[in-house]
Amino acid sequence: MRRPAIWQAGVAALALWLVMILPAAPGGITPARLVTPEPPLILLLLIATGPNRVLRALLTMLLLLIAALKLADLSMAEILGRGFNPIADLALIDASARMIAGSLGIWAAIGAAVLCLALAAGMAAILWWAAGVWQRVSVPRRPAFLAAVGLVALLIPGFLPLKAATTSYAMDKTALALRSVSDLREFRRLAGEDPMAAQTGLLTGIDRDVLVIFIESYGRTSFDTPFYAKAHLPALREAEEALAEAGLAMRSGFLTAPTQGGQSWLSHATFTSGLWIDDQSRYQAALASGRQGLFHLARKAGFRTAAVMPAITRPWPESARMGFDRVLGAGDLGYRGKPFNWVTMPDQFTLAATDRLLRDGDNDRPLFAQVALISSHAPWVPLPQMVDWDQLGDGRIFDAMADAGPTPKELWDDYDDVRAQYRASITYVLQAVAGYARLHAANPPLLIVLGDHQAAARIALGERREVPIHLIGPRDLVERSRDWGFAPGLIPPPDSAALPMEGMRDLILQGFTRGTSTTALRD
Image 1 (spheres, one colour):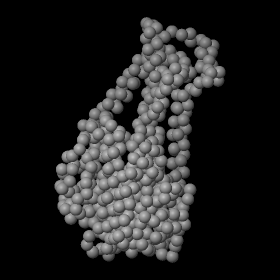
Image 2 (cartoon, helix red, strand yellow):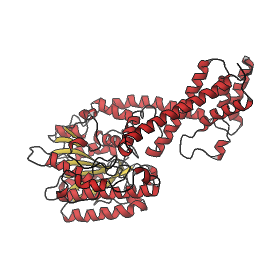
Image 3 (cartoon, one colour):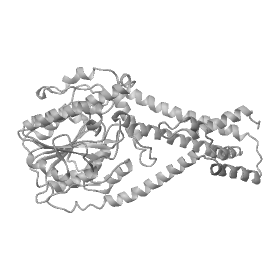
Image 4 (cartoon, one colour):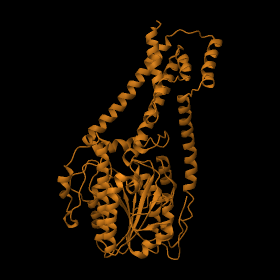
């Protein structure tokens, strides 16, 4: 076996070192980091010099796994404001592919998948080559020499102000995986314990339809970040005045959501289950536990239950365990207009379809429904505009709007433009919800309107996981939220503390039951 040239050994060592210093968070590469040695590299190079091809393969797979986890961390930090959980987040790969396909097209999704596979294959090939180069390096194999080199590698961090970052990273990820498995076991136990399941007479204080309306990416940033507040606060004040003139009562507050930047279903599940669900494994555990969520208990109380989900374009078998009598996906809502990229239809049409399919006609039982509004979902282009409610038809009135504006690729070249579009999308949704509430002011349903999560930090200009919540409807029902700490109107005081989102299920169940009252739930 011919020995490699010195330059080849150096390039191979450099390739291994670059993988080890790859950052796991934005901004992780600094000049100091570029010149900081990685003591474990000495051990890895020593291992690579062994003639065993199994060791070479193990070294390649280990470094490839570390690189993949770091790249996943970078992606998750950019989109969701947190790192990647190797136990809980694998299911997000499919969800991400579907979002890319819906926003940019199926070929973009295929291209992204091919690019990821090509990147993984290229990294594997480079690492395999680098380990192979060092496999041909001749070093003494005597036990005393190997022990001495290993001891030096282990002692270097003790004598120099160095941190074996890759070793720490691998240990932290391993600990996270083990902790996730343990937490999930405990979560399954807690999910099966529910004091509300045995209570009777729940929700007897409500004599009308209830709509729980989730607004995509609607966060606290709309209230106190100047760039957003200058548009959203006037829209809320205008809506507040119009709804008050129509005789409707309003109270509002803030909630702490389990996620930021995406994974809306985790917030939906947290709100309805009364459990903190901040990753996919907990979500699946909650579904499998048999936990009675808000809609299970509403059905038990005599309501018709439904979910209006315009983002659902594929089979959704999980919904069978969520307490819904009926699930209306994108294909069930009667929309015949053009989609707005990933967004299947404008929110105004979704709200009108809720009336047409679930609320119009004679029903002997009131409705308790979840409605997900998605016009404020990325990529925020194109955006619909409000039209007369009696002109909606089958949605083709929106076709010209769906063809207007830049493409997502053109928009996302400039984050200032992206933020402006996001701001406009929230304004549109607020107008749609306020218009819907005013449309039904003569016989109003109880509307529970809340954000599912705040937008990603780069868009929201903040990393808080706090969202607004508004109750709109008859005064006698809305005023029951006064004991929860909710303030009159649509704009809570700036210093309002956020309630935990998982506490809302029990507050609603108890607060709208005759003969009961609730007190504010605090951290």
